[in-house]
Amino acid sequence: MQNATQLLPGETVVKEGKAAILFPNANEVFYNPVQEFNRDLTCAVITEFARDLLAERGVKVVVPGEKEKVLVSLTEEDPEVDAEADLTTEKKNGDEESAVVATVGEKCELGLRVLEGLAASGLRSVRFALEVPGLLSITANDFSAKAAALIARNAQYNGVSHLLQASCKDASMLMYEKRGKKERYDVIDLDPYGSPSHFLDAAVQAVSEGGLLCITCTDMAVMAGNSGETCYSKYGSVSIKAKYCHEMALRIILHSLDQRAGVYQRYIQPLLSVSVDFYIRVFVRVFTGQATVKNSASKQALVYNCVGCGSFHLQRMGRRTINGKHMKYSAASGPPVGTECEHCGQRHQLGGPLWAEPIHDSQFVHKVLSAVAGNPSRFGTAKRIEGMLSVVTEELDDVPLYYTVDSLSSTIHCNTPPLLKFRSALLHAGHRVSISHACKNAIKTDAPSAAIWDIMRCWEKMNPVKREKLSVTSPAFKILSTEPSLEACFTAREDANPQSRKRHLTRFQENPHAFWGPKARAKAGGGISTNLQDKRKKFQNKRKITDSSPLKNFPCKRFREVGLGISTIHTHNTHTSIVLCLLQISLFLVFFVVLHLCFMFSI
Image 1: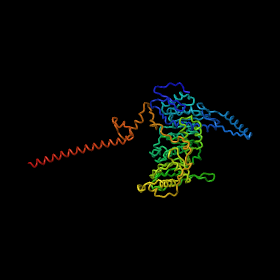
Image 2: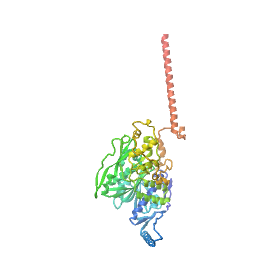
Image 3: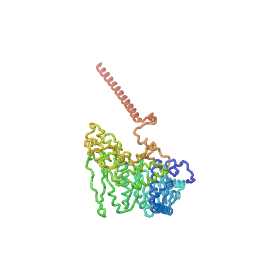
Image 4: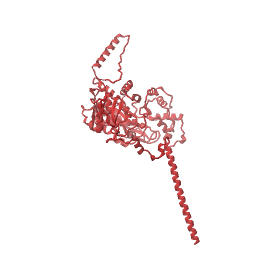
């Protein structure tokens, strides 16, 4: 229930989930409404994590609106089975009555200790208190004094001050202070504005044994290959520009987490890793074990990416083999490619290292999916969560990275085959194939690159390109010059169509509204922030047009073409004026010379 807290001048109430947040109109505290999906998904993941962890402590988690599933086998033919089932049901009911029940909004003495390191307005923490059961305490921290004061007011306004405490400290220092085994947090949530790299070292130390780390990265330009050297300095991995850049970004942050945890004899277990909108989000558990940490090198890999055709190969950093009851570790052998690509003859780029193991825990993802689908009214973005998690469960978890059908077609300049036919061709050839949540045109498959290009050659024979227009040195010419070693079958198969598509789930949501991406950073000193769109127009637009120009009100999509056309006309008129001026000067000089000659002859 909301407390009777008075609104200050300039404040508005922002409602999301069960929370109502006091938010200043001035950009003093950061808030982005588009990340409601992020917060909904986090609440769902922490709820299932709490359910599993607290079950070991004898605590039953109760979520409002969730239907209990009681499976009892009743048969009329065997009354003894009926009696046995009744006794089993009574025993289960007795155990449930004796167990501690954890509900939302109430403090659970055996519950989880949660830290939100960069809380801003405290919306996420307030939602935890109101929507996630089984919590002992929530610490909502922010380095800004204004943000910390707002968090305290929001906790009071939502009536969760008994669970939520505001903190005003440096997030890293706060986590370093809680490194003791009895002081660690069970859940740490970090959602910074930009890169979380400088918080990761403290986070892997401050989380409890088997605890949950929830990390968001919004610096996608760095992680997707625009600045590989910057990515290496932040995450210890070189990013490259490729079609699979979003999944590579997920594997880069997982590599960085595992590397930093390994320093303290700890290792990670990814539960869920998703690429959403303009950011990525990972949920990992952290454990301690010196023997398991030795496996870390064999979990990382370098990636060789061809700049011509986009074929890629992974090279593990280490090698482990089982020798009886012992594990033998050795250096990996490589490289897996030659100096030139075997398909197109172009060079390779080297990226990584990156996490080469599964990025999801399928069993845990199914639990979250079942809970969300069974209680759709709990979250505002439940349909999108169900669609995305359904795609995640369909992914091949042991196949890193992916190809895209449009890039394969673009390489050889042919028509793009339908996804269903291309997946069917891979299945007919005896390979496994799936889609990816990170890209709607993605093809995740265990087929080697040679088989993929053979299928594309077969498709090109059905949809031929004009070979005479291809350059001899182009990747398309070299790929199509080789005959396919298999005969691809593009007949559609039933198992090539994923269930998420058959059920018409919301798998790849369209942009919610215009300018929906990252918002402007909050100003430390308060005050109204400069409009982000004005800044984009000022610093990013290539054309310079004055405010009085009539083109600013021109609604046509060919605005740029019109502007260039008028600019060309203006340039042409300027050149004409210069030529006319030069002609006039030349005529004047000729006239002067003639007069001078006439005067000389007259003398």
